[in-house]
Structures are given as C-alpha cells and as structure tokens.
Amino acid sequence: MSHPYRTQPAAAFWPQAIAEIPAGEVDPTHGIDFTVKLHEKIATAGSCFAQHIARHLSAAGFNYLSFEKAHPVVDPQTAERFGYGLYSARYGNVYTSRQLLQLAQRALHHRSFQDTVWHDRDGNPVDAFRPQITPGGYSSVEDLEADRQQHLNCVAQMFREVDVFIFTLGLTETWESLVDGAVYPLCPGVSGTGSFDESKYRFLNLTVEEVLRDMEEFLQILRHENPKARVLLTVSPVPLNATASGKHVLSATTYSKSVLRVACETLSMRYTNVFYFPSYEIITGNFNRGTYFASDLRSVNESGVGHVMRLFMQRCGNRTVADGEPIERPEAPPVAPDPSISVANLIKVMCDEDALRYHVE
Amino acid sequence: MVALTVGCGRHMSRLRNGLQLGVAMPGYVFIGNSHIGSLTYSPTGQRQMLPDGTPIRLINFNEIERLENSSMFEPDLTNFTEIIKAAIETAVSELGGDVDAVLLSLGGAEHHLISIIQSNTPYRLEGDPQASAQYIPTPVMKATLENKMSWMNTALDILEARFPAPKFFLEYPPPIASAEYILAHTPKAVMTPEIAITPVATRLSMHNIMREVVQDKCRERDITFIEVPPELKCEDGSLSEESYGNDWLHASVGFGDVFLSSISQVVGSHLRREAA
Image 1 (cartoon, rainbow over the protein chains, first blue to last red):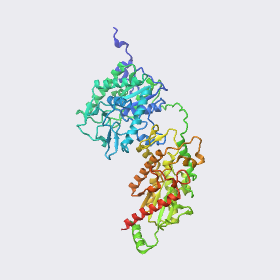
Image 2: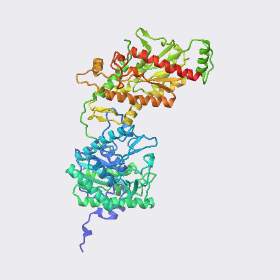
Image 3: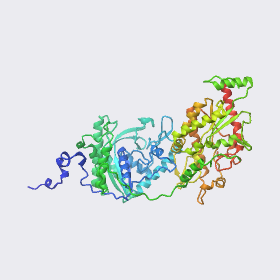
Image 4: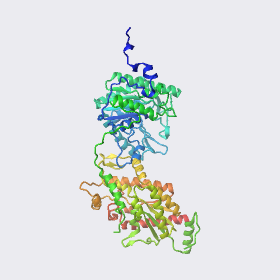
C-alpha cells in the first residue's frame, strides 16, 4: 500500500537521521536550497552566535565584508576591543527583530529616536543603541554623534551592497522607550550604562506576530534599497542569560527560541529570497547530548560551531570540509601601501638613525 | 653638599637644609627623548644649568646606542627593560643620582608618526571639521596611543625605583601649523612628489589626545604635568611660529628658554611647598 512516507528520504526518519548514526554525521540541512558563491558579498548581524559565523566565513575565504573597518593607524588589538570586525559594521549585538528593523530605519533615515545617549558610571556618554561598543564611553556627545553618524552610513552602505545578509535572531525580550518605541540591546542601568526609570522604559516580550511584522518591514526596506539581496536567517542556540518575563529562565528561553524559530520558518516559506539555516537544531539537538555547550551550558564550544560551519560549507558553500581541516583562503589582491603607515615605519628606522634626534640650531 | 638621610622625604630635608645653609643644590635631571633637546641645549651647546642657576643633567634616550638598535617605538620589552636599566645606571654613575627633581619628556614622536603625513584613507578626530575623512572616535585613538606608549610604563617603573625625587612631565611641543614649513623640512628619505601634510586640526586633536594619555599616566603615578605656556602657542593651540625648530616636529631653543622659565617656577614652587 502506498503512502507519502514511503517516498521520504532517510533524513525524514528519526532512527536513520538521528538515533542510528554518529552525532557528528547528523545533518539537518536537508532540503535547503541556498548556495553562496565565493565572490558574493556577505554581511552578518545578530546575537553573539553570529560572531562565530562571521569568523568562520572570513577564515574560509568567503567574501565576508566589513563595511566599517578600523582605520589602518589603529592597531588590531585596539580595533577588536572597540568592536571593529565582530560583525560587518560596529552595531554590536542585534538581538531582536525590532532592533534590526530600527537599525535599518535609522541608517536609511526612515526614523529617528529621542533617547539615544546614555551615560556610564563615570558620566561618559554611551551610545544607547550599542552601549558596549566603546568601553569607557565617549569623550563627549559630539564624539559619540560623529562616530554614530559614520556607523549608520556604513550600515546603509552595507544594506545597499550586500548580496547575502546573514541574521541570527537571538531574543524576543527587549526594553522599549515609552517616548517613541526605541528598543535597546541592554536594559538601561545594566552594566552601569544608563539608568532605569519605569516611567521611561518598559519590558517587551515580542510575539510571533510582532517578530513577523518587524522582519517583513525590514525585508521591505532591504528590497527597496537592494532588490538582489538574499537573507539567510538563523536562530541563536544560546539560551537567555536572564529573563524579565517573570517565568523560569528555561521556560523563557523555550518561548523565545520557539517564537524565533516559527518566525524564521514562516518567513522562509513566504519569501523566495529568505532562507533558514538550522544551526539552532545542530547545537541544541539532543543527538549531541549537550556536548556542544561549554560548562556554563550557554556558550557554544568550537566543536559545535565546527559542526554548524562544516554543514554550512557543504550545503551552502558547495565545499566539503572535514573536521579540523584548514581551509585555504584565496589569495588577497595586492594593496598599495598607505603612505602614512609606510612613512611611520620609515621614520621608526630614521629614529634609530638619529633622524628625530634634536640637533642644535 | 649636605649629608642626607636615605628614604622618604630625603629631598625635602635636603632642600630645607640647602635653603637654610645656602649650600649648592644637587639640581634637576632631564630624562627623555628628542624633545628635551630644545630645553637642554642653548645656541652655544648643552646647558649646564637653568637660568635660575639650578644645575641640570641630562639622560637622552635617543643617544643610547643599544636602545636605538632595539627601536624605541616598538621595543622588545625584555631587552628594553635591561637596556634602559643599564643606561640609567650608567648615567647615574657618571652624573650622580642625587637630584631634587626629575623632569621627564619620554617619547613624544608616537603621535607624529601617525599624523604628519596624510594617509591614503584620510582620517579625522574630534574637533576636526574635515567632513569626508574617516572618523576615529577619541577613545579609539587614545587606546591606540596608549598601546604605542606602553613602553613608557617600563621606563617609569625603572626611573621611579632609581629616582625617588618628585617628578614632572613636560608637555610635548604642540604641532607646527604650517604645512609649507613641514614640507620644507621633511626628511629627504620620506619625501615623495605625492606627499601631503595632514590638516593642522587633525594634528592638534592628535596632540590633545596624546596629552590626555600622558596626563593619565601622570595621575596614576603622582607625576606633575607641566603645560607648555600659552605664549608659546597660537590661538588655535599650535606652536607659535617663533618656536618652530629646525626640523618638521621639534621646537627651537628659543621655545626652550621660555618653557624653562615656566618649568623653573612650577618645580621651584612645588619643592618649596613640599619643604614647608
């Protein structure tokens, strides 16, 4: 007797796809029809997990772009400390669909907000939309505004030029300004930035409908700016660190991730340029018995990230990469030396050769 | 010389005794790099004393051959510590370590190295109006300079251990405003037809950030920071034209004359206050 299950592939059956194969061979990417070519411009944003994706794509030779690079005079250690290169622009963590939508709205001048500058414990100004991007705060509000304007210009350029935008949705919980609906990645007052005032802010736990609405509005803006852009969605497998929902943190995590997962599935079914990659399933699936999490049971370890990226390369990058195999990067085009830097090097030598030694007039 | 007790307050008792008995003072030691040249040289050669008669001695890191070989600006810190220590000990044995005040002008080229010549990707800093250049936020630039100046902590540790006397850090001369003057004095080795000088606003902002870096270090280590007197600066804060030195970033001995008199006042009054 014939029935639909007779024609399903092995991936559709739990024993064959999960229980009876080694954990490292579990591959939930079956059915994903999304590939990215090496030359295509890729940008990332999202929660902490998106940083792993960015790092691996860059190391694997994909055209992962940073639209907001540190100036060459800034040393790499300082650049990293100030959030350059973590994502494709210095937005820090973009945890929610609402944050992503408002980032695009701000960058493309669709909307502006009022409560945008907080202060840290020492009174230094902090960008309310990315409170941890400048440790120790800015030297002045003018310094902050100049940096923010440049940042938003880079974000706008990113949305206009990107071929593949990878967004990792992390949370549904956020904090909203009662004045104009601005949302923030951190609750005001946390980590010594800003101060909490319940007459100014409220807790928001987005529903599936709200996430869908935000994302659809974002996709509309992106399509208007860049019709060719494709969007790859993932859900961060990292559980909530804390919840303000009044629920147990595990229940709150389950709610949040379920909402995000449903939203991703819905969007990928509704839009031909939107895809979902199951990194969430790879990390949280019980087939790996929790071994992809570090001892805090939140952070994803390299082994878990490696599994995700190996499948990503196979399914979406048309590349087969064994565990731990180094990936050869395409040769970078030659770059003309920056005169200020080469001169600095030369001057160093010249200093050694007394060039900067004081000479009596 | 008055007999001294070793330990806390040594220089104060000496100063008290010296003032009371009219005995010659041990004087000040200038320690630093190229910028101390304008302060410790006169048109006729190296100064032996300040205009007020205070004897001065000089430890010029730029003249330490082994240190030059180690590269001042990216020193191998292991070698650096050893070299600096040895150099200071040698200078102390030659000059004597007994001093009333230590006047420091360590470094002072780090910010020039990244700001004199216009970058392929021009940048701007806080307070700098070039709209099209890449903006570098002040904390990012400050952290960059702090990294470049990290060698100074090692040097200060050694100097603090060797010289317990009060310490003063002398502000580096502000930048030369005139791009024409800088170009005319650009070392041949770095001169190219395409070379362009960074706008003075950028170099002034860089100088101000560098000053903050040094002032922070001074606060951490209880070192008094002495600013360049206003009469040696233009209204915008750049170096007065009369103070331009004979190269593209140093100040003249005339600048040194004026600054020294201000330094003498600040140091003298500090020591008198401590002695009282």
